[in-house]
Image 1 (cartoon, rainbow, N blue to C red):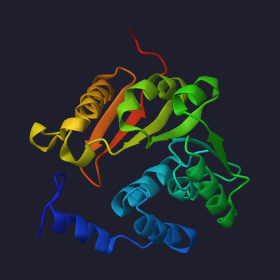
Image 2 (spheres, rainbow, N blue to C red; image 1 turned 135 degrees about the vertical axis):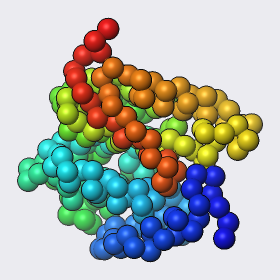
Image 3 (cartoon, rainbow, N blue to C red; image 1 turned 90 degrees about the vertical axis):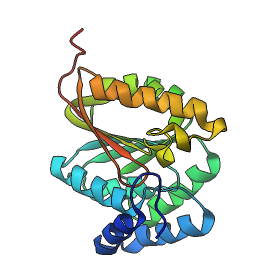
Length: 222
């Protein structure tokens, strides 16, 4: 059986086989994503998100990169009663689809979709969030980080998806020439969160790579 650049294919298939299947709107969105080649979190990553967020029972979640609303709807299952999700998306087509899907899931009063470039939108966002999820332009994660540190409460989780980027981040032999800038920036991001004084981080080689960071204190200590 063929192997991916991150994990052995038979391991991935086994994990997916025993992972509980999504239902309702989420199952429909998985089918839509496959048929229309829309990137959403992979099944094993979705289950990791479900488990992580349920352990912290978040009241407020910030998502950078809405796409069709799949992960926002997934996150909503772990919210405390009265909780809210703010999610940012720059592409009009994705915004329209996400709003339709969120409404179909009956979550329009819980999930707020903000249209715009995250680099610009994040400047104006205030308050504290229990969890922040980054799943947007891979070359901009490091640019998002200062805003995430400002907005994430102490004891909160920062979850970053696609951080191994088809294995290119871990090994130069997989790097596609046109992706070199993204690879360099993502490596800088992972090095930063792995050694940042405000964070305890781990990198998990499932899906396309997931980084989970726990905010240990509110200031950098520098």
